[in-house]
Amino acid sequence: GHKAIVDDYPGVTRDMIECNVTWLGKSFKLIDTGGILYENPDKIKQLVLKQIEEILKKSDFVLFVVDAIAGLMPDDKKIYQYLKQSNKNFIVVVNKCDNDKLTNNANEFYELGVDKIFPVSAEHSIGLDSILDHIISLIPYKYTDKKEEEKKITRITITGRENVGKSSLFNAIIDEERMIVTDIPGTTRDAIDTEVVIKNKKYIFVDTAGIKKRKNINEKVLEYSIGRAFANIKRSDIIIHVIDVLDGILEIDKKILGYIHENYKGIILVINKWDIISPKERENLEEKYLDYIKKHLPFLDFMPVVFISALKKMNIEKLLDIVIKVENQYNHRVPTSSLNRAFNDIIYNKTVTGKSGHLRIYYMTQVKIAPPTFVIFTNRKEKLNDSYLRYIEGKIRDNFGFEGVSIKFKIKQKEK
Image 1 (cartoon, rainbow, N blue to C red):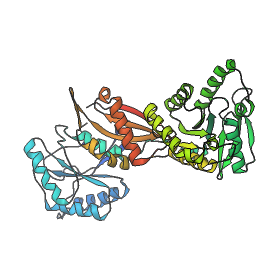
Image 2 (image 1 turned 180 degrees about the vertical axis):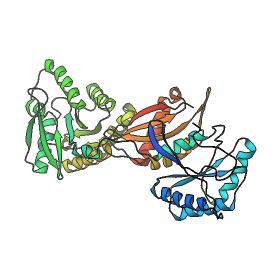
Image 3 (image 1 turned 45 degrees about the horizontal axis):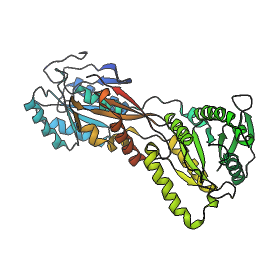
């Protein structure tokens, strides 16, 4: 609202005006200072200058407002130099761009040496949203307490059909780490979770009772074991899904892998009993598996695949390194500035034009880890279709990794 006194004489707004602004769920305090005139003997002016310097020291961000009608003035250059020297984070806002001609004139302010100017008309409320967007892109979301995030122990589940070697793998991991293992009663009466320390870090393996116990099993219990696997997946962070090298990826495996992906968990595919494949066949078979995944499970192309022998303790070390890597990615946070830099071309240029007008993406920010969750602010929620989201996801992965981790998106429509 128009809280400041607006008048046509320089230096009318003597008193500082403060207000709180909320935009797209983020809030900041805005302070309107008195105008700065340097060569002015007026005592009040000198006082204002001192006050402004004090406020600037405490501010995180400065909007340096210049006048499109007056053009670039000597005082503008001085203020610009002052802001530069004091290392302030600031943008140049060119006000009174009430028509195209004036907006064009505004380009004169590039002479100051800025990368980007923000032309606005305060009177006609033109261009203000781009400034608000810019300001809040610098404000981090209120995250869950960092300490809480650190306290959380990563939970791992080993899934897979019967006889693929889940219990041998679990035992191989414990042997590899020469670990004292602590059993913790799980959620249901016969569920047991196990604490294991891998590379000096504590992990919980979820419901290892099932892994330790189930040796031979009849068909009727199979359905139950899938239900149990699904429940365990839900309460875990990372899933190691095991298949038998000779059986390949069966329908039931696809079902489980799909469920892991839908629940945004870290995921590693382990192909066990690799020792029974003769060394000269291995390379060829490895190719076959990777091709199969590309073709039949394209939504999992970010999933690491490890060929092991649990029985012969082959590649267990490599698997554990991947577990640690996936856990890091699962808890990775991308700074908004890096994200917006990577997406510069689609955020600042109207790229996608459909039948019904432009799709604009205003900006993107990561709001959560474990799983990594991104919010995209756009003008047309319904136009951000799956293939475009896949494009965005691909770009995030190219720039920031996230190997072995499903990425979650939330799309918010921003009203004009």
